[in-house]
Image (tube, rainbow over all chains, first blue to last red; front, side, top):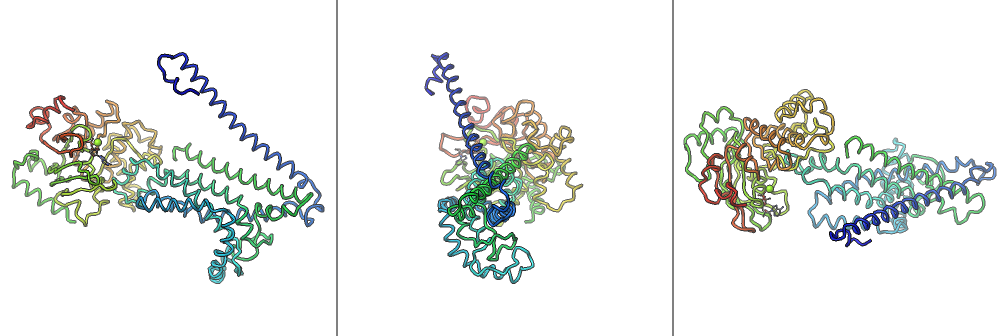
Length: 317
Length: 297
Ligand SMILES: Nc1ncnc2c1ncn2[C@@H]1O[C@H](COP(=O)(O)OP(=O)(O)O)[C@@H](O)[C@H]1O
Ligand SMILES: [Mg+2]
C-alpha cells in the first residue's frame, strides 16, 4: 500500500482509488485472519471430538481399569479446577498489589525494577518451576502445613494428615500462582497506569488520600482489566502441565484436603504422564479428557467476556 | 489548628489597618459587608516562588485573595496561572520535583507549615478543573457524594441525601438530574458534567473554590450558566478562577489579577491585581493595558 500517495493533493482521484484499494486489502486480510482462527479452533474441536468418540461410546468393560469414563475424568477435572482456583485466589490479590505498587505507589526507579523482576518470572520455564516446587517450596511448606493440620484441621481444606514431602495440592497451586502472577499483574499495571490524570487529581482535590484515590478511581477504572488478566492467568493455570506433573503425588481421589499426600491429578498433568505409555482405547480416553479441558477453558473465556461486557453495558468500566 | 480564632484576629487586624497601600492589595470590602458572609476564608500568598524541579515557573507572588469574592487570574498561556492556582491547595506538589518557597496563609494559617496535612488542606480548598471529569464508574448521586464519603464516613443516608440535593441545587443542576440520580454521570452533557463537578467540589463545604479555566471546554450557553453559578457561589465560598477569556473575567469577577511573563523561559509574575472594573478600564501598568485591550498575547 502506498501511503505516500494517499495525501497527495494533486491526485485526488488516484488517492481515492488507492484508499479504496488499501481499505479493501486491509479488511480482506483482517477477515482472513479471523476466519483462520475460527477454522483452527473448529479443527481442534473436531479432532478432539472424533478422537474422543471411541472412548465415549466404548462399553465400560473395555475402558482402562474397567471404569466408567465419567468416573475416570471427574477426579481430573476436580484436580484441575482446584489447583487453578488456589492459583487464582493467591495470584490475583498479589498481582493487583504489585500492579498498584508499581503504577502508583513506588518511586519511579524502584517501580521500574520491580516490574522488570515480576516480568522476568514469566520467562522462567515451567519445568524449572516444577523442580523448584518439589525441591524448595514443597519441603519448606511441610512445617506450615503441619501447623495448619494441627490447628486449623477442623477446616476441610486443612484436614490433614499433612504430607511429609510437601507434594501437595496447596504447593502445586502456589507454584501455579507464581507462574500466572506476571501476566495478571502486567495486564493490571498497564491499565492502572492509564487511569486518566484528571480523575486522579479530582479525587485528590476532594481530599482523598492516595489510597482512597486508588479505591475511588484507579481500581474501578482497572476492574475489567483485572478480570481479563485473571482469566488469561486462569487459562494458563488450567492448562499448565509440567510443574503440576512434577509436584503432585497423585492418587486419583477427590478431596478438598489441600495438604495431604493424596491428591487428584489435573487433566493436563495426567495426559503428560499417561500418553507415552498408552495405546488403543487408552489414547482415546486421554483425548476425551483433553476435550473436557478444552471445554472448560472455552467456558472460562466466555464467562470472562460476559463479565466484561456486562460492566461496559451498565456504563461501568 | 485553631482556624476560627485566627480568622477573627485577622479580620480585626484588617479593620484596624484600613485600606493598605501595597500595590497587590485589592481594596478591601467594608467590615460590614464581610460580616454578612463571614464563613468563607481569605488566602494570602507571601513571597511565593513556585518550581518544577529547578525551573522557577512563578516568581515572588504576594497577594491577598478576599473572602466571598471572585478573583480572576488572566494572562497569556504558559505564564503560570495554573501553576499558581494549584499551589494554593497543594496540588502542585503532586508533580515529581515540584515544590514551592514562601507562604500561603488560609485565614492566617500557613498551609505549607510542616504540621499541615495536604489532605486536610485540599478538603478546605476545593478545585474544579478545565475538563469536566465526573467519576465515570459512579452515578450522579455517587459523584456528588464522593467527597462526603471520604471525609465523614459515618453519615446517615437522609443526611447525605440532603447534602447531595443541596449541592446539586447549588450547582443549578438539581432540576435537570433529580429523576436520574442513579444513572451514570457520563450520560450528562459537558456543561452538566462541569456543574456536577462543581456540586461534587462544594458538597464538602470547602472555604475556597479554585477553578482552572472551568468553561474552556464548554459551549457559550453552558459557559453563561457556569458564570451565573459562580456569582451565586461567592455567597458561600471564596473563588479564584483562571480564565483565558477576558469577557469572562470582566463579567464574573470582582478582582482581576494579571500574570505576565517577560519572555519564554522566564518565570511568570503577578504584576497587577485590582478591582476588575479598574483593570479593564484604567489599569496602572502598561503591560496590563496592552493585554486587556488585545494589543498583546
Ligand atoms: N508538569 C510540569 N512540569 C514542568 N513544567 C511545567 C509543568 N506544568 C507547567 N509547566 C511550566 O510552567 C509554566 C507555567 O505553566 P502553567 O501554569 O500551565 O501556565 P498557564 O496555566 O498560565 O497557561 C510553563 O512554562 C510550563 O511550561
Ligand atoms: Mg493553565
